[in-house]
Image 1 (cartoon, rainbow, N blue to C red):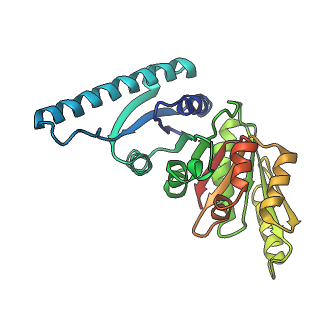
Image 2 (image 1 turned 60 degrees about the vertical axis):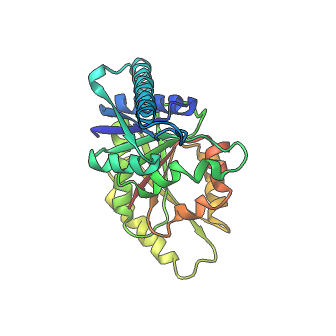
Length: 277
């Protein structure tokens, strides 16, 4: 792990999540890029060309000062030396630029805050966080507002047992091992799913054989509903991080369209780690 990208809008939520990013940087011995994506301010149509340029320049200077202040506070809170973090300003749309910067700078991990739903859940999930989680090439940590900034000791990977689970578990381990965290793999098998039992058993055996020398445990449960089953399991196991793999028509898509998201983000108050298979 070498570089963490942290997008910030300077909000209280971003300040809170930055503490998680700082903690991860120290645990993983990583550098941090503090990114702010801004828009050109609205300028009245009757303003002269000079006034427009002056307004834009003033806005950029103000943003630069805000980012510098944010960076100073980040370094102080995280107890990181100045050479371990840098500042970057980009013009455009937040999610698109975050993904673009992550790719162009070859970052290893994105850590970002989320605002939580005040009235409707889609205000929380329907914008930047979901876009970044679905499209980023590198793993993404999303940190709900007010979640305790605790050392991640137990990571729960909710596996759908589709595609390459060996590769998926390895991605979780690549983050878990440097942290000294345990990794538990759980698959919730719905009772009505036909002709899948043997696939589940074969996948479990394959994972157990591959990771028999690692701190990994694999479990599967039969439940009438996958999402409810995972919800119950999380309440009992109480993981510090919930990990999920993203691929086309993935299990994560189901979660984004149901009330389980509300449990994960609002009730459980748990960071999520997402990555592409």
